Amino acid sequence: MSASTKRWSKASGLVAAAGETAPPPTAGVFAGGLPPLPEDASAPESPLMVPLDKIDRSPYQNRVPPAPDAVAALAADLKANGLNSPVVVRPKADGRYELVAGETRTAAFRLNGEAAIPAFVRPMADGEAARRLVADNFFHAEMSDYEIYQGLVTAKRALEADGLPSGLSDLAALTPWGKSQVHRLLSFGRLPTEALVALADAASVGPPALRARAAADLAALAESGCPPEVITQAVRDALSGECEPAKAAERAKAIMAGAAAPRPKKPAPPTVRAVSAPDGRLAYTLQRMPKGVAIKGAKSEDWDTLAADLLAWLEARAGGGAGGGQ
Image (tube, rainbow, N blue to C red; front, side):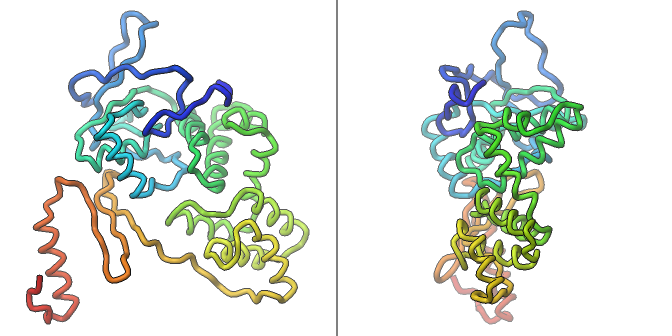
């Protein structure tokens, strides 16, 4: 399917063929095993209701977990308008399922307190699952260039594991871009190891702001002899806001010229943090406010018990002097 025939489906971020509509979900909850094949192989595939507590995050996922505000916005939209596109999962040997497409939709269903989600259950090998997941991600407009780079690396390894060609043309065929942009995106892999560590640390908080063009400029500087520690410092400065991400290469040149003294910088602490349950479900979000914190969670949460637990913890932290205040 060419990039020109792609479209964004409402409230899902999933790319579908123009004019394609999803069939309605079947009734009941699909608890395990593979769905029976239809008698007519040409019949349209029907989604099944798969329990959310049986769905695991894919080990091939290159995107950072969806932002809590994005999940909350989608959850509200789903309550009002329903789900347009079922998610895609593959069955695992232990009876659980691995999410191939639909991470934000799954998180939104969990936030809404749903027990199951409409899903297409498709058996597929590891390599195919990796390629499908990253190829779908490439069409998400909110992805950072660094996340796309990680997806390209995953796709390349998956192609090679299956004995398939993995050159620029093959990778570009999975994306909406041409070979030149794919080559530019792969420039992240040419940065010094410590710079990649800084990017990975930033990605654990949110999508890094450094773009592929800036990474290509920094990689070219590194290959021309610029010390790795200078490149790394420029990357850290770009990630922390010390300089504009697009001007990271200029920052590296200034450091080399002595106009900007290299010093360690860390990304600012996040204002919103997500807390996930062991099964990957989004349990709570905690947001720092100017004079406190705000905690959000599912409507089904026992908030009275949570408030009592937090009060007991605060009293212990204060040395027992809180006195049971409200």
